[in-house]
Image (tube, rainbow over all chains, first blue to last red):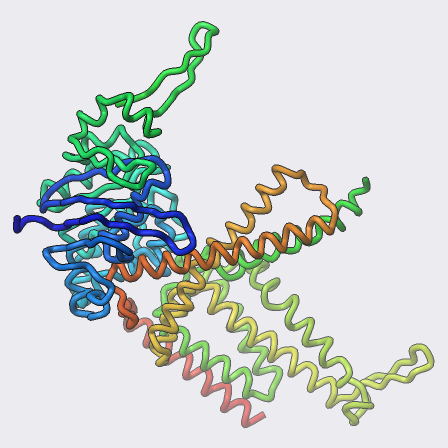
Length: 264
Length: 283
């Protein structure tokens, strides 16, 4: 049981003045696992990642991280907060939110510097992660001048520089060109092979076979309605269709319109 | 409907879009700062200190000729820093010195500044006499303004804004303040683009011709929408900062490296300023 990283029990969360975002989520995540969280829009995937990252806290139920209860009070203590932040990193869906510094270099340096890493070591890490993600030529650039794909890679670099044990990815491949998607999938797979725990929220069914060993499906009731390996989830076409997870394509063949589902 | 009427009706949109375009061009474009020129190659800290010295010199000197020579030096620096001459002259000579000229116009005349007459004229039954002290004072004021503006513009054109802000840290400004202003700059571009996109989206749906009252409604709605989105984004950015270990006391990277060339430049700047002060006392 010692390899359990996150343990969620009957977690409920509602945004102020809005409908509930999570309604009774139970989940256990172990060290080194590769997990995908899928579901239609508004089913609570991003909320789950923010809970796991200790940015918001459940209104009911509990989240345990590394054996300790994750509470707002525990994040007030700087040492405890830093211990947690060194182990868990979140790549936000909107890279513009994550890249708030005036240059790419400073954005990558921000996390390690806040966590007390020595400046020389930070400089070494900047070059290392820039090499890994092929963004050395972007280091002096201003984030607003970057393309979406470049921003996403820099956002990943800003978390990679912290070198956490757990990576949380929120829609890492949304809106990206195929080559950048490939690079990000490779990064996730390599990180997992190095022993990192990966939790990815995504709509993209094409990638879950590669980025996950276990897939949790969130339903419109804001709860986990299925937790199976990728093949089992992808083969259950009626389930995917009911839960709005199937890509439907419309083509013209020989002058006739043809509509079909599209699955990997 | 005439073009003139269309223009009148879309004046709000045109004004906002022009203001945003100016904002992006004037404050956020780093085209010249990224060029490989002389001033761009200098350490931002020492460059800023040297320009502050030039600025103090321009403000303190009482000779238009000496201040003019400083402007000439500034112009040469602009050329060596690969700033297009036309762009530099438009930015430095057109508006602010022209505006200052209008400000000092009354001081040319004997009513405000009595003294030796240089020329006189008769317009609409009024006698106007321009005096030597008035003319000298006006020329000194305009040259001083033009030189000061040129120095500031040259510094901002050849230095990335993020570096200029970091120089504030060297001058003892708290890191939190520097980080906050840096983030304002960072998101200014994003929101300027967002407002532009909103206008484009509105135009794509309602066309370019709209009644001015409708235009006012659109602007009010746009303001409210932008406010909501900025508030939401500020919360999300704060979360992103927390997520990477921010606890209220920012730690930022020290990125400056002064070389021998930078120190030589600073010495030259001090010598030039001292020389100008010395000449100013003799004249």
